[in-house]
Image (tube, rainbow, N blue to C red; front, side):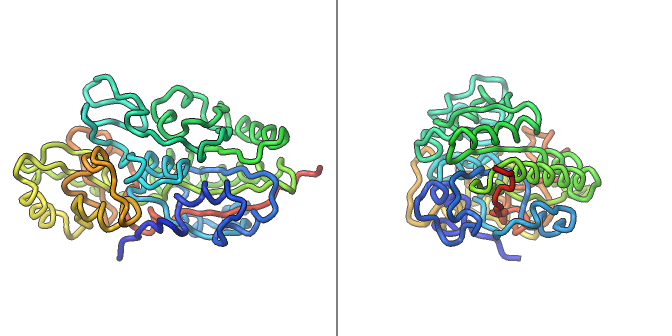
Length: 368
C-alpha cells in the first residue's frame, strides 16, 4: 500500500471553502452546485469515502448525491482537518498539527483545549491565528456545548455561532438560515466518528449510526428549496483496530522525551542528542507496520502543507523528530494518554480509508 498524499492546490479539503466562496468554482466540485443561490456545507465527522462506498446500499440519500472523493489533510484527524476546511490552509500553515500537540506550555489536547497535568492552556489565538471562512461571518450550526471551547475559537474564529441541541434543531436552523437569505451555512455533526471510536466499524451500532446520518441528510434536502444545495463532506475516514491492535512503544522509551499526536500518527520527540538513534530504532521496531517519517520529510516533501511553503518556526517545533504513520490496522500507544487505547475505530494516518473523504451534493426538494 502506498500512502495517500494530500492534494494541496487540487482536490483537497483545503480547496473546499475557497471554492464555495468563489464566483468561479473549481470543476472538481459537485455539479449540483452550479447556479445554487445558497449552500449548506454539512460536515459529517468520520464519514470516509470508503465507508460511504462500502455501505452505499444502506444510504439512499448519500448514495443518490453526485460527486467524488477528495483528500483530507495529514494528519487525517479532526483538529487538523476541520481547521484546514474552515481556513483553506494546510496544517503546516495554520499550525494545528494533531489531536495532542506539543506547544511551549506542554502537550495540548486540541479538541478539549487542555494541557496535560491540568495546567492553564494557551490562548487559542496564540496557537492558530487565521480567521475562518476567508474573513466572512458565515453562520456555524454545531453543538451548543462547543460555543466557548478553545478549539471553536481556533478553527471557527469569525463565524457566527448557531448552536444545536438535537439533530432536529440542526436541520431547522439550517432551513431558517437559508430562508433568511444566507448564502453559505456551515453545519457539523459528530455522530459517525463518535460511534466508530466506541464500537468500531464492524458493529450494528455503526451501521445504525450511518443510517441515522443518512436520514439527517435526507431531511436537510427535503426542507431546503430547489435553489439551495446540500454539500456533504467529512474531515477524515476511519480504520477498525482489532483486538491486540494497540501497540506499545516501550522499546523506544529510552530515546523519547515527549509523545504527542494520535495513535495512528504518533509524534516522537527525541531526547537531547538521540534523534538519529530514535529514527533507527523506530524503523526497526515499527517499520513493518508504519511509514516512519522525519520532521524534515513531512514538512519539506509536502505531507503537511504545499511543497515550498516554509512553516513558521513555532509550527516546525510542533512536529515530532520522528512520526509513525500507521500502515496496518494498529495504533501506537502514548504512555501519557493511555485511555486512547480503548478506541476501536481510529484515524490520523495516510491510508486511503483515512485520507479519502466525500464531496457530494444534491439540490433541495422543498416546495416553494
